[in-house]
Length: 346
Image (cartoon, rainbow, N blue to C red; front, side, top):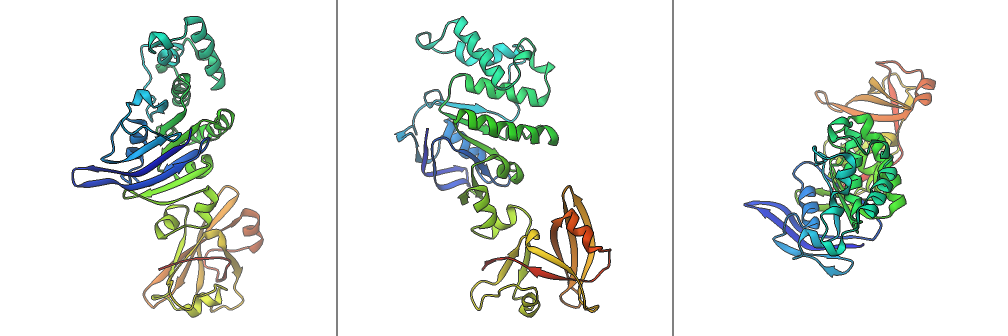
């Protein structure tokens, strides 16, 4: 099911949670609503679901205006961060709940319900726990049961609000890939809210970046990361180094190989992996290796450069572990930089 949001706005008193949001999500996409706390992403998700009403604007599902329709009439499944499972019900009964409360004319018999519930539990790889209670499950297992329950009513759209936010980092990482694989299998239009940029980039086919109730950029993870639309997106998605031409001499930046624009843009944003480190031939090089951190296969290098008499500038670079070993660098070594690419902003 495709989703079209037209001029959606929502205020809470004097606070503008969403301002004139226009968003189109094609059928079958797995979309992340990404942004800092308070940016409006959960409010937008709840408005799509029908749990909250917008002050203005319209919601179209497959071209049909659903703005005034009750949540039960939208064909949407919702998964909350804290599972919202019924603690007094078994796993089987939790998943069956949505089918059993359907109106009599649309309610399947118990044999069909049982077949469907077991099929869903197999899909989320937890059928062997069908007779357990939620308190007997791990957090990751409870979240998968919550997802199976949402899928039981065959929703046209699946909405997930911080689905892995309450889980440990290792469990969260496993469930990200599991959700992506499950989406490929089911192809249900899905939207999930997250403030975790790594989660959004790893799981989603499309990312919508929000800040202060406005959409800052929409695109694939690669587009968002490689071609940020503005300073906020560049700084929020991944790490970036900032070089201000009005504070730092362009001569130094030109020595790094950076192509300096003649006019207009004045701030260069450079990703750490776009900075190459070379052991300095000139012992007077002002760039000094301060420290480094191991990030698995990558090394993050912290450099300092004294740009003014009292203002040292910290620069971060990243390189493969093996490359770092070949340089034989030590703390305090002087180095030179080569910048491969930068994004310029006003």
